[in-house]
Image (cartoon, rainbow, N blue to C red):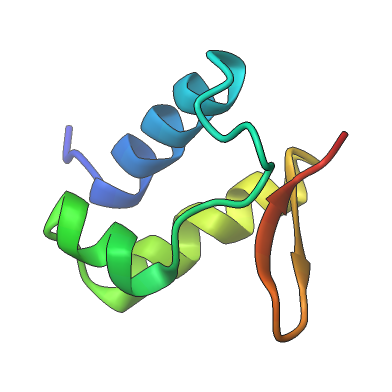
Length: 69
């Protein structure tokens, strides 16, 4: 079975959100996540899209991605 980097990012971000590691609710930028996870833009965007689909985060145009309260 093939491992997909975007799934590892999803799990890591979910764990951080559940642990309260983003007290202001704002996730790091796509560029920061790319660097941290050594992942492509597509992998980071896929991970964020999954989190949005699950209702965990929402995008705010011009502001970033935030945890849904």
